[in-house]
Image (cartoon, rainbow, N blue to C red; front, side):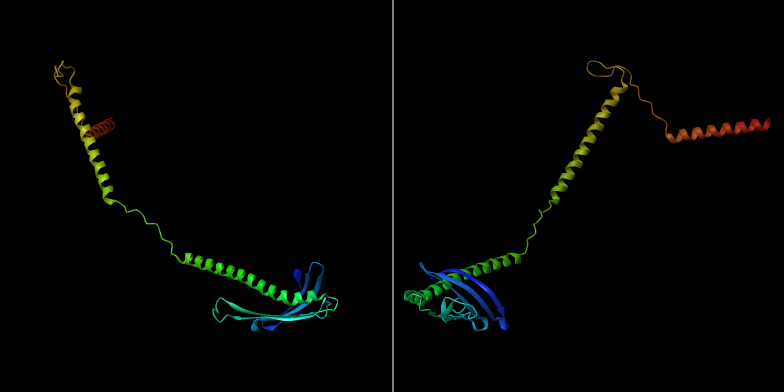
Length: 235
C-alpha cells in the first residue's frame, strides 16, 4: 500500500529516553483507503521500537502489532547495522482477502527497503559533515606564517650616501675655482682681444676688522663724554 498520510498527534517522554509516540496513518489502494492509529513504544536503551494499535481510537484494522530491533552487524560493527522487523495485521471481514495478503507480504519488503534507503542517506550526510569538520579543524591548527621582510642592503645605502657626499665636494670645489678665476677679471677695467688685462689691476678694498671699528667708536664716545664733563665744571 501507499502511505497517504502520517502524522504524530501525541508524544509522551518517559525516563531513560523512552517515548510513547502516537501516530495517525492512512494507506491507500486504487479502490480502497484505510486509516488506523498506532501507539509506538520507543526504548533507545534496548535499540527497539514496538507498536500496537491505539485502542482508544477506532481504526480500519481489527488489530496490528510489530517491532523494530537493531544490533551492530557482526562483519562490520562500526559502520553496518543489522535490522529485525516483524509485523502482524488482522483485518475485518469486509476487507477483501487480496488486501490482507498484500498487507502481510508487500508491507514487509517495502518497510525494510525504505529503512535501508534513508538510513544510508543519513549516514552519508553524517560522514560528509564529520569529514568537513575535521578538515576545518586541521586548517585552524595550521600556524599563520608571518611575511618575511626583505633584507636591508646596508652597504648599498652606505655607498649611495658616500656618492652624494663626493658629488657635493666636487660641486663646491668647482664653484670655488670659478670664483677665483673671475676675481681677476672683475678688478681689470679693460682687456685685449686675447683676454689679457691692458690696465693696471685694481685690488678690491678690504673691510676693516669688526673688532678694530668697535674699539675706535668706543674710544671716540668716551673722549667726547669726558670733554663735555670738563666744560660743565669749568663753567
